[in-house]
Amino acid sequence: MIERSWPLPTLQHMQRLTDNCGIIQHARFWLPHYSTGYCIDDNSRALIAAYRYYRLFGDAVAHELTIRYLSFINYAQRPDGNVRNFVDYNRTFLETEGSPDSLGRTIWALGYLATAKERYLCIPAEEMQRHAIPHFQQCSEAHALAYGLLGLCALSEDTRWRDNALQWAHPPALALLAKYHDTHDSDWDWFLPELTYGNARLPEALFSAGQMLVNNEMMDIGLRTLDFLNRVCYQRGYLSVVGSMGWYPRDGVCAEFDQQPIDAGAMVEANLAAYRLTQREEYFENAVMAMDWFYGKNVQGVPLYNELSGGCHDGLHSQGANANQGAESTLAHLMAQICMYQTAPQLFVVAIPEMPVEDDYRRKW
Image (tube, rainbow, N blue to C red; front, side):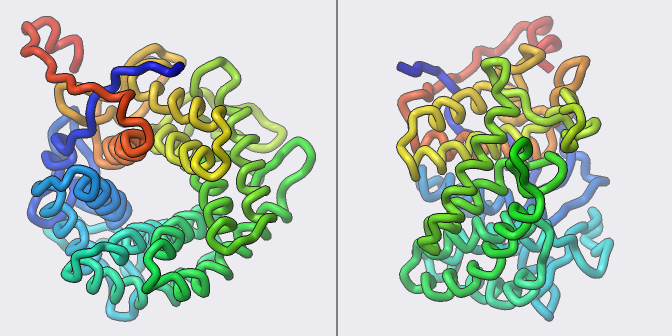
């Protein structure tokens, strides 16, 4: 039987990184690094995290943060429905058009909010999503397709939007499936010729879309590709995700460092989604090991979650944990933590750290 005593989800650091515009991209140590400004990527992830937290705990702060991040997306969406990504601290856009991944993440976040029971949340989210969908359906990049499909799968859970979600999801799901058929072989059961970042979102999106569209091939390939990724990342009896210093090209060597929280968080959520779909216990065990990665069960044996700040360090390097605690890493941990709490709340405990003495404080930071 799996036993853990993980800390409860907290909005502490996410709230610290957020001002009256949105969530700041980066941090220096645990301090918001204002000069790095904002991006729709992080505000979309923050919107999902805040709304999940609000639905789970009924928290007033999470409710206000949900409105803040939704407002940022509204600000960043162009009149034609596409989105811009980067915004400086003076709230000036730094580009005319964001990346396909940015658009996919926006569709992902709006898919959650469009199902909200509160009309003042769902109505603007619905309108923003309708305007963005035509641009999303022109996307061809694998990660963008996956992010958007996850949002459409969330949208399909609302009976008001199920028919629209099915119609909108069919072309990108087929496009993601085609990428698999174009690339995989007997030794490389994957969508692309290289494992890079956020890998688990691709199989999660495909088997989730297959479940929504009642497409057995999509469900089967989605689970097979997740199994392939799990074999790559759990060879040592704990999670070791693909490092960003070289990634893992087919017929190449898998980079050990730098390991990113966005990958560990995606492994938690994808394996939990597979567990819900199949009830296969190994997926739940993999999700637990991925959650443990944040708390020190990794190749370096150091925690990425910082219990004093409530934030997550930005990566696992060959020398240890990155000292900074920015938005992407903090949100990756928080989203995974909330998802795991929804599935297995018995693995969490209320943990209020004692005020450390000065030497302990320096060591932990």
